[in-house]
Length: 267
Figure 1 (cartoon, helix red, strand yellow):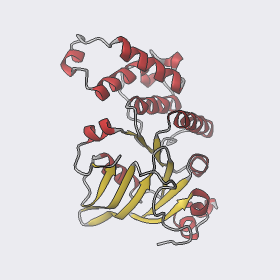
Figure 2 (cartoon, rainbow, N blue to C red):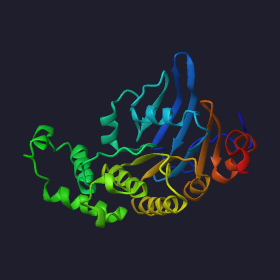
Figure 3 (spheres, rainbow, N blue to C red):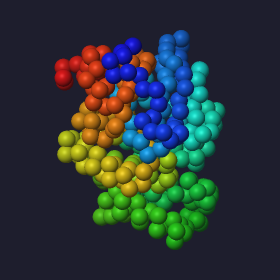
Figure 4 (spheres, one colour):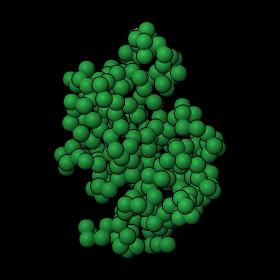
């Protein structure tokens, strides 16, 4: 384990952590995907998580969100043990997520994505009524959707089906949908995946602006080192399911073990 950058003992703040993952371990067929992972994120903090493909980053996200149950360890969110809570209950407590592979609903417009998300968040919608077109959005739901269209800059595409959008604009839909859940913590799984340099820069700027305004915490998994450097204040590094470094971003990126495991020829 690298000690040059130092394994971070906790959030860079005196406030209690919004996320505390302790000793997270996950095995598949006897093979360790995560080995005793411990990290923290403070309220309003933007933290990065990097590592080579197969390092366990997405598996870790799935354990945080409840899509997988760890074999050992615990997840505390906002002072509450959520280790055994189902996904939807964690989401309603304030954990939002985007996915590495764009996960949007074909045939639905941008606006409809936001309306459906608000109904799921509030628990006011009834699926059978929606399927029979007997449940109309309320004025408040429309207002919240309009506000999100404005926040992510998708007003002109509001009533377009999502499959007609570019990948970059689709990423903004996914970001807006996650923000509609009113997260206290947003888990971003490689949001720049598939984007070109200009689209990545635009997404990073939008994310930074929205996060600064709403002050939710972010845990960002990302391969684009420039994006990570520009957005996060602290950084953790996984390699083969182990946490090999953690600390201030510049110090971690300069760590010899990190450069060898992840950055390689890029440095």
